[in-house]
Length: 337
Ligand SMILES: Nc1ncnc2c1ncn2[C@@H]1O[C@H](COP(=O)(O)OP(=O)(O)OP(=O)(O)O)[C@@H](O)[C@H]1O
Image (cartoon, rainbow, N blue to C red; front, side, top):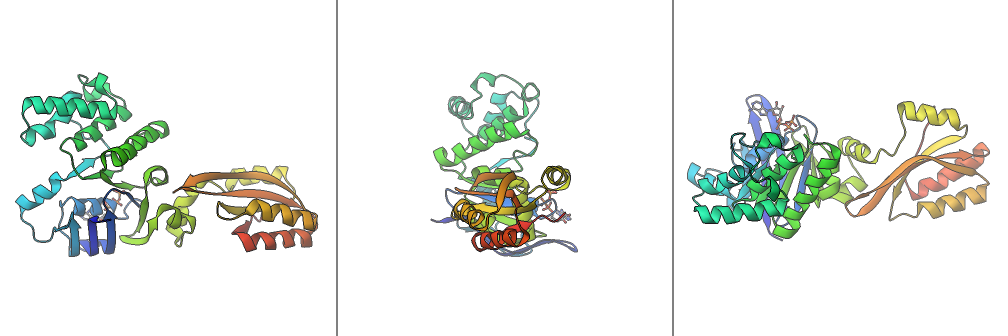
């Protein structure tokens, strides 16, 4: 596969502030690549380097094989034309209808009226809002506005779509709808998508690969299942926790404790490990009873992940033996009161 975006040892500073440092990444044609990080990690800066709104301080950024370093404004405009943008706050023109918003980039690109009308109709049908063509943005829900935003971004057939926190202003259900639409943009139209987000759900739903950005550095990157299946950094682990919610804490843990007198352990579940078999064998041999008291298992990058919290009841040495056997198969944490 050929790379459409490449960062080579990129550094970006604003005065004394280093926003990005030593960033190497490659986005391949046809994939959905997510860049995840908390506020201030450098995500917006990275986007502004891809669409050539800012120059790098050092290193190189290549888009579709073109090195952006030292390009004149005319060439930069050409590069930008190949990149569609979707924004968190939609950025629609309030004074124009849905049709007018989607037609706007075509007008700027010099398309004639008949071609514009044909293209807008095609795009509205693709994003599923043909019936809203003559509505104004203020008459639309957040999800509908983002559909218009996506249609507008695709108008001139860009190869790359940059989705910058495209679902952060939406409720969970609408987020799901917009993410499914973005996935269709990728699979049906073959558009490469770079999704910038602080939401783990976005990565889980649509990304093929992910880079975790922390304080201006990429701390992990790779296929989603690999990066989140065995996280190597605390930042990545925190993102995994937000989607799996697989370990009880705070009030939940106190309530579970009040109802269950045995020892509590959380075992990490992965679908390439046979935790169920190990558990049932160990409890039977050591005469320990168990109860499942908390947990969740989810799909992540085509594999199952999660955690189950178990109450283990039996003699202390027997429970210790069960925990030891489980630990040979997976990560196990005892929840101490
Ligand atoms: N134009 C600028 N001038 C000075 N500092 C900047 C500028 N742009 C970004 N920064 C700094 O660079 C760092 C990274 O900011 P950036 O906006 O890229 O992070 P982010 O991950 O997008 O955060 P958020 O999700 O809050 O937008 C921050 O410390 C920020 O204050």
